[in-house]
Length: 92
Length: 372
Image (tube, rainbow over all chains, first blue to last red; front, side, top):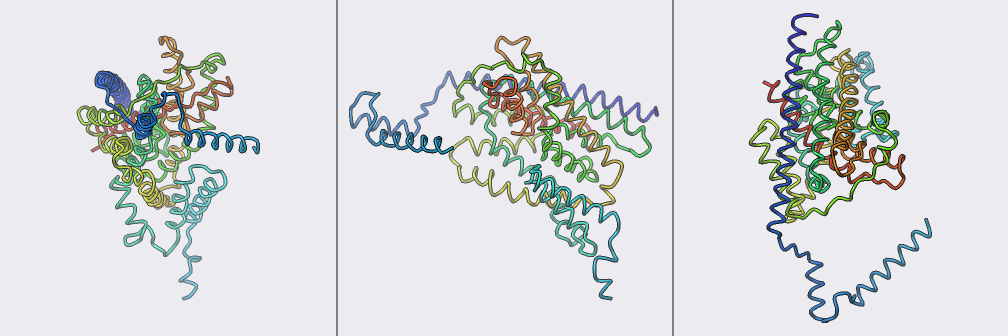
């Protein structure tokens, strides 16, 4: 084996050691970062009000019904969806 | 005179062989459905560049400009990375951040392959420098844009062969990985169910790309071109206020760039650069890198399963080698073969996207240590 190849193999060994250490160190730091983000989000939860939730609340306020009640439009939509689903599964 | 203006008297044997290689790539893409989005432009680029007298890849030719504007500068792979970022959902990784360790372990294939490339220099037909070896080894990251980006910086003369090898092995994931996964796991391990992942809030998803960018710019600035564009694309997707830009990044823009990137890579498939012993070496080393990465991912998952209080199915370690989402699908398939009620797809997406980050970080390290 030539001296040049020995030198290259040594360099590759250094690259392997440094490279894997840095990859692991970086990604372990990132694990810490993700845990910190999760902690931050638990500590300061945002009011994530989706348009659906807003509409639902508005509907509840107007109708003043119990939270479990479903509006006729929603019930009709669910019925139509179930009907279509059953038809397609029967076909297939 | 008329005869001289046709291609027939000007064809060289090498050009004919390379055109057959181009047709071969088109066959694999169209008939076998192997990475068609990239292999069709690459295959067609190979046909165009080998046409005698047309001068597609000479100064003044279309492919020459496409290559020098987008591939040589590294711009196209980075734009692709932005689009990939805009298409990636990190929920599975944020819900279970330990999966990053699997993405890290699978990068071992890259660094181990450096030795293989240097040992090949013992044979009379090979003369790889450390830069060449690094550009070849990144094939083990199973990430096309990363491989092209690094090759364009470290070994532009090998770019064609490296890109073809990278995309071929990504297409061959369902064939290469399962035997390695089965050889390293017991049937009981393959059956292990995993706990359901928690729901991730929108705020976490927005903060994640910013945190990745912050860590990269502090500790690994050499990786910021790749990681930065990836994070930018992901932020476009997750912030929810620029749907138009997000849509463009993951549809029109990535499609346009894919066409040009493929043609640019195809233009490098000329006989003098591709029909060499080095290409065979690159293909062999790519397979080695990919196999070692798969094996170390699975072994790391086995180790984590030993020390974890929750089950970790060792199969998901194989998804650490990027190749999104093919590797995760393969994990799911092999898992279902062992236990028909065990759906591992979402669990495998964690290490899968971790692998994208891991290979970009590995590319940054190689660029910082071997480049210039």
